[in-house]
Image 1 (tube, rainbow, N blue to C red):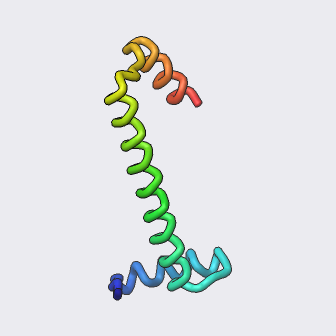
Image 2 (image 1 turned 60 degrees about the vertical axis):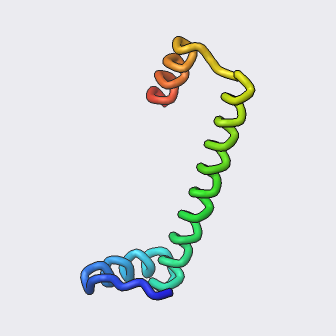
Length: 74
């Protein structure tokens, strides 16, 4: 697979890579791998939520509101 960046993007990637002590190719590859891992975790969490809903495992709206409020404060 090939990925093409603009010259400006290549400069930015090279600068970040230098700061991280790696090269631009490794930086991009690592970022892509993290994206794939995060996508897999997200999809697994969604499937878990669907399974819970299918089993009738819900929380009340007030409890969800409280959880969201707590998350936003953190």
